[in-house]
Image (cartoon, rainbow, N blue to C red; front, side):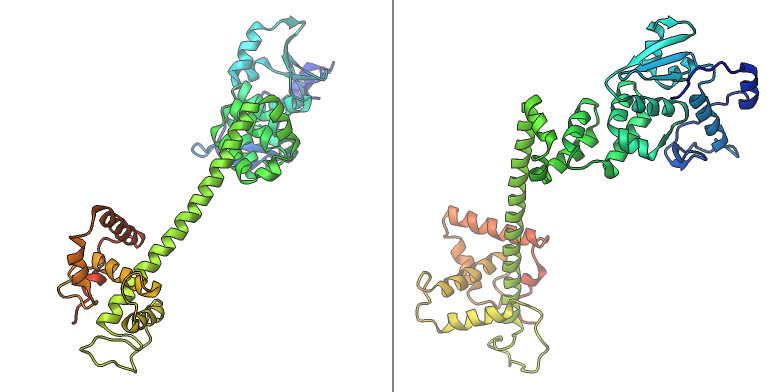
Length: 381
């Protein structure tokens, strides 16, 4: 137990330890302390001087040995942690205020920290001295340390606790408790990470003891989380729907490119009427050509070519009309009936016109283009 009062000679102890040095300044990095495998915040370098591990060790010894300690911190289980008023007052404004109001018993001022284990309080006070902690202590007491760092306004320790939870200490069993704690301790990033974990792993999380306890104590929070699960499920379905829709628009775009290619250049078995088909031409790069050539051949020989008479011919009529809406210049276009459909658009009712316009816009947007140059060049070279 840190700071147990002894009857050792003060002068001899002072000779061994020497005068106390300034505590290490907090910094963003973490380095290893020379003894006890402690983690400590690395101090920023100033010129050729930086805080050494020797200085950190001195502050560790000051805490462990409790030399001339003048504060006794009582914990729930009857334990006592000894500390120095000047140090903890500078480290946390809350304890500074508590010390001003505390009663003195002999040489000690007495503080009380309740609601957390004794060892967690000890780890917390150690951090106030040297910004050090042991990894195993952090893993065991990260939750009470988060509470203490928030309650006593120690921002750096609070930040470390949040980082440790985010980087591995957060799991299915404790995520509900951590989520509630993050809301109470004003840790928005941590609460968001917990919420995301709960929603994505709802089946596993809802089977934990933490969920059952939350249902009894915070039914409104349970309702909020359930709504989040429903919204996430809806969002997932919407993403799938949009993905499938985009796939259809992309296929239509590729079909339009293949149609222009067939009517302008020729491909495999079909080519322009005024050009000789080259049997030894290189392989086609349009995947839609094979199916589109079969559809064109069926359309050319079908007896029920009128719209509505044959489902395959109806599809071909739709492709031709869609092309006419994407084509920039029907006067020079080689796709059959392109100009006829352009003229027909002017006589179309507003409802049908709006549907075709929206479809054409979505197809072009899917390919992230304005008007494709491919459609403007559907004429002979």
